[in-house]
Length: 326
Image (cartoon, rainbow, N blue to C red):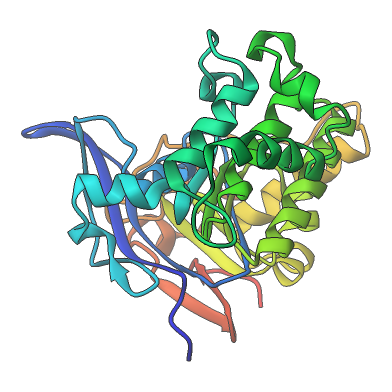
């Protein structure tokens, strides 16, 4: 079998110091293949974003990350030094953040940002670009994400563009560097429905064009259905279900996944009383029990006496549940 683009085994991330540490990611494992879009789904606080930031080593100094295996194209990221990791970011590994405004210097023009990124990573068919070519390439990148007046946009400052336009610019910058792996952290959360669909189509088209592997972080199962080849559902720091998107969304095996689906469908139908999963996320730990047990409609005594291990539902589809659906 080919080497996965990204392999994660037993990833654990905690914050704090000494004995006063809080574990946020609690043994996450998955593979992401070249040209694949894997959705990482769950409520706020489930550990989705921290998982992505852990891979790219973008966490603050009080974070501690460890993993049995964390490789990119077969290369251990745990053994990559800070300078080498900085070279990998952008050219090989990239991130699209939830709030595009924070990705730009408000005192610099859009053109300055794109040209700076292109020049830093020396992209181009021959591996480098002359300074005079950078602006032309930057304008072409903006055209590829359907920005009709690229020269005007390049002369603008971040505050002069809408959130949707800034997200387009960020997508152009990211995919313009031809990274092999992109982590997209809820890039459509603050956008209206029409702009959201446009941005999702852009990400998918750019991903296909460059054959990029994408880890797509979202809380929206509807978004996952349209974009992702596979989905991994996270709850309280762990993946509780992973498999092909259509299989999981049509026949979810974990009660939490089923609850998320019921909520999404209730929103789509605009029900007067929206379906909700009872209780608060993260209120129960994984210590000698299922962390979802306090909120689960199918809970049994077994769920509160032992922690469920990963079980195979069918080839490529696994779940962490004692009472999973077939």
